[in-house]
Length: 238
Length: 293
Image (cartoon, rainbow over all chains, first blue to last red; front, side, top):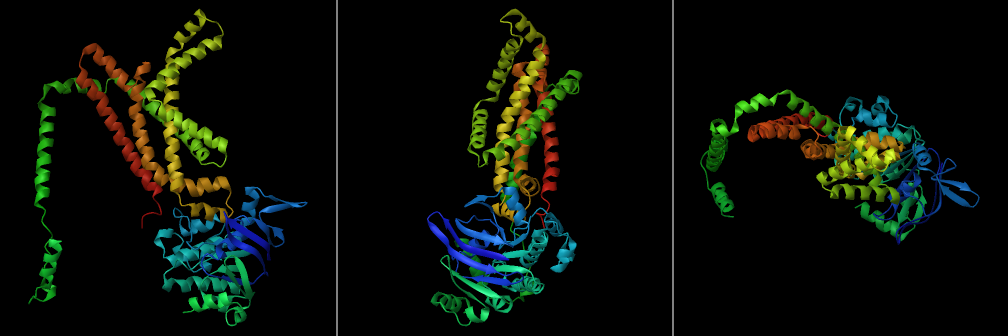
């Protein structure tokens, strides 16, 4: 489904991703863990070409993202083509990024969805509310409904609950759990270890731009092989 | 400091009353009354002067206020304002994205345009265009002297209006470009990112996501600029175009009633500005959807 191979990414002289190789099978849930600044968000943004990779390749369903191969060269696609590729990849932001001048339903409709998607996240009764009239948790659920609008094959979640008050985290995780059960391919950057343990098929641990380990939750969370992983887990589990 | 400590002393003093019996007395503001009375006195004095000073010549004022030549001049003022605003903002909507473009040629051209047309005083620009029009007319005919000059005289009125409109529109476009640019910059970059992540085409992103949000920042400044333009049309009197200010000058040049005729123009400018302010209120309300709870 997603094949990331040998991806490098630098901002100026700072290397934020170093030789990342990762495969996400269709219908699986991958949770990316790591301290802040470890490159988690950048990795996610490389998957839908919100960031350009410096080296390496990202494929979704076998299709190269952002580039076209001609011989030994990769030509960057035109913006129109990239936008078309992105339409099949849902993205949920930490700060929701709903369009504030549109109602919940208009937001979803802007992505081609309808009221049934708001029903799916339990917000059909808020269809005509503006984002500002909704709680953070409700806004994020609308944002998830919007991401579903294009019928994406894959949804990327960039710390979807980090900007929420603690009592609102649960409702968003519930929606994500339902999506996972329905067989949606998901890559989730989060600090919610409980959610990761329960829902993830694979856990990936990043540190300083390197992929230190990956495996099922029972391995990475319970028997981490790497010292950095142990240190990180002991901090977030306090 | 002393207020704070005395307030503390008051609250810490033991009280025998049950707390729910205490009545709240709002703070008194005696100086507000004094200030209001002083200001009202000045206003009253001014109004009294308006009524009693014969120099205002209110009879003459009302005699000319709705007079036909003044009405015609008012129409020309409105035409210049409307056409100048439409052309100016059309230019601004083109120039602002150019200035924000990644293309260095577009960026430089836009920057230079704005620099030049904000630098040149409107009155200088108008005279320049009027004279350039005269030059072009001669060039078009291709005859060095006589005939070219005659051609200019026959079309002088049209050329003058054209020059005035050109000057106003170019001047306005430079300011409008900056107003639109400020509006675009005021939109959170994460909005563009969200739209890009949804795969919304570029032009649709601008039209549906960026511009409606930018409008909130654009509108107050645009209304300001429109009022400014309305008043700037009075500058085109230097091209002898019969707009409001030129027309009242013509009239008081004949009858010598300077003050009441200046008041005719003044009151019309005030009335039109008031009308624009009302319009602004409704347009702003339309674009504030989603921003008020």
